[in-house]
Image (cartoon, rainbow, N blue to C red; front, side, top):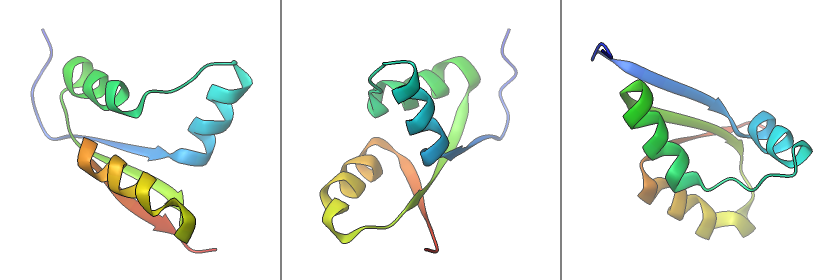
Length: 74
């Protein structure tokens, strides 16, 4: 039985992206956060990533999925 508590996920997007690419996989960010919530009872998922203005639509989408975006300084 999974113990419910204050479970947080801290995700470095660059490492996640590179490993997924190395494995020739494609990551569905919505399914990933659902998996974290169901399997590990994650209440908050912090996604650390670099900010690029051209990716604003992506950031809005990730935020709508429930990720809390933390932008790294360049």
